[in-house]
Amino acid sequence: MLKQPPFIKSIQYALRGLAVAYKAERSFRLQAFAAVLVIATVFIFPLQTWERSVLLLVAMSVLVLELLNSSVERMVDLVKPRLHEYVADIKDIMAGAVLLAALFALLLAVIILGPHVMIFIRSL
Image 1 (cartoon, rainbow, N blue to C red):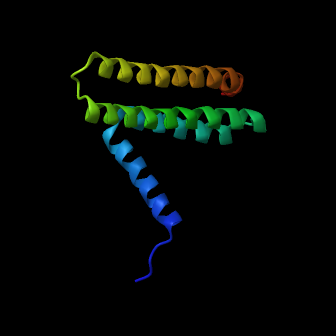
Image 2 (image 1 turned 30 degrees about the horizontal axis):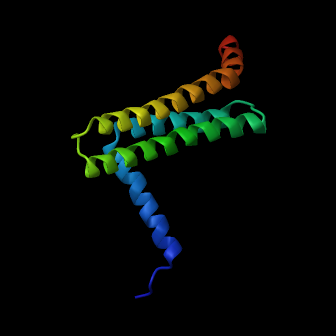
């Protein structure tokens, strides 16, 4: 049997991590669904390249931040499982970071997609 190159193994580990997050984290599933909607939307509406780039960048940033949040939560639980007030603080701070990123992504989506959605609605 041929030994797999390290790069292929790394990709397998990364995909496994995404699958674990998707199965275990409700927030990640919701944000992944929102990202899929954004990805579909950037190809439906006639957006400029920079608009597509911004929307895709913020959508992926929210997903990455949620993965970091989930990782930090698990690590904190391993080190000090709910026995210290800082555990709650760390989790809340990370959740706050994800919330800010998601709200900013939503704001950018409204600013960029709003006019296109209004034109689409008026054409119906």
